[in-house]
Amino acid sequence: MTVVTRFAPSPTGRLHLGHAWSAILSHDFARARGGRFLLRIEDIDGTRSRAEHVATIVEDLRWLGLSWDADVVFQSARLARYAAALARLRAMGLLYRCYCTRAEIAEAMSAPHGAVAVYPGTCRGAPERDAPFCWRIDMAAAVERAGALDWTDHGRPIVADPAAQGDVVLARKDAPASYHLAVTVDDAAQGVSDVVRGVDLFAATHVHRLLQALLDLPTPAYHHHPLLAGADGERLAKRHGAPALAAMRAAGEDGAAVAARLRAGVGVPTSGP
Image (tube, rainbow, N blue to C red; front, side, top):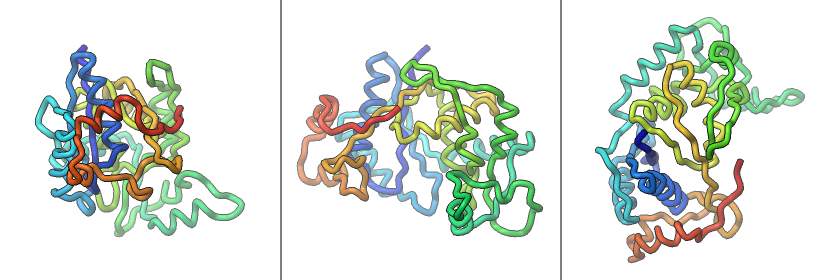
């Protein structure tokens, strides 16, 4: 089977070295196996996505010496696919409307003598009303329907435990699909065989594996990689002053040299499962 990987950034800001590290790992994984590397722009968040960031992402990746093997796919052009998946899950009776505001959810999750790490199911079974809502999955019902699940990560079997993530959102009040739903549908539609992404998304894979089972979608092999960390030991991120690739380009740095340093292990990876 042909190996297919992808890099799927959101155009809500500029790429930094942590993004470059992940893109290179995904690109090189496919190239080393004679496979295909795809670029997908996850622009489903219409309030934060910016066209100028899309152009910069493309320039940054080309500056690093990366190329992809098909036209760039945009999530904003695939809304019908997500709607169909939601409709299928609704027909199974696995979704419910959640009217809670972020403040109400935060208050419920931090209440003394009963703090919880996941959404407490406040709206599960509540009557419908005329107010903005998101769609949440009834996790207990979904897990019962799907049964025991697993996946492989770096070739190791992982037992899926989606229940630990609670009743996650599958369609937001301000977006037609959540990350969980969109990425699961898109990876299947694009024939992605191997998902190479950061260990920060490891927990999300439990939910993605469940959705694959419910929607009769194939399960790719996963390869969650360590994250690059800065001098302070924190993962590279914009809020920690990670240098933007665009700024490095503007300063005259050689993208091929930057990529070579990353491939050689320059940077401090954090630990992960």
